[in-house]
Length: 124
Image 1 (tube, rainbow, N blue to C red):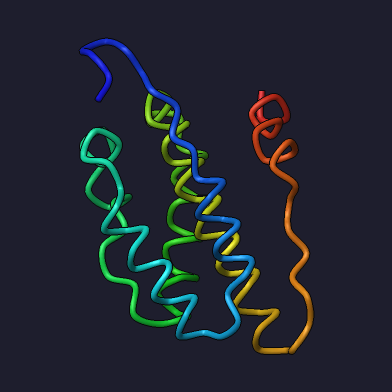
Image 2: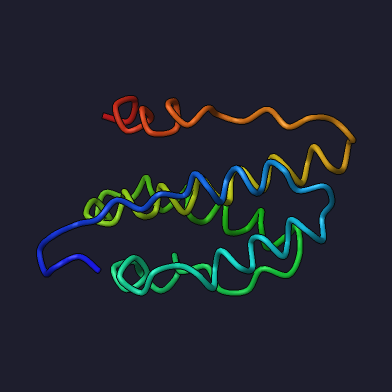
């Protein structure tokens, strides 16, 4: 846990790799449910309530949270929370991509780790 005033960088790469390996929708949902349960209290308490993923029981829930988190990143008033939001949103974006690829039976195209974190530079 980071000391007061200190920030720690959330690392969601292992979760995104696990999502990429999911073979079906049930496995994907189980991964997302574990991810939501595993979110650090420190990360969650800095986020507004409407940006704290709770229930993930369907592909629609995955899409909802992906959109909600991505939209929240654009809000100027959430500047201090943007990094945590971005990391959580990446996991849900990866899951949305995976649900689509599972539905159509194709390999998912995803961002490489380096591109995901360089996105901060693109957003500036």
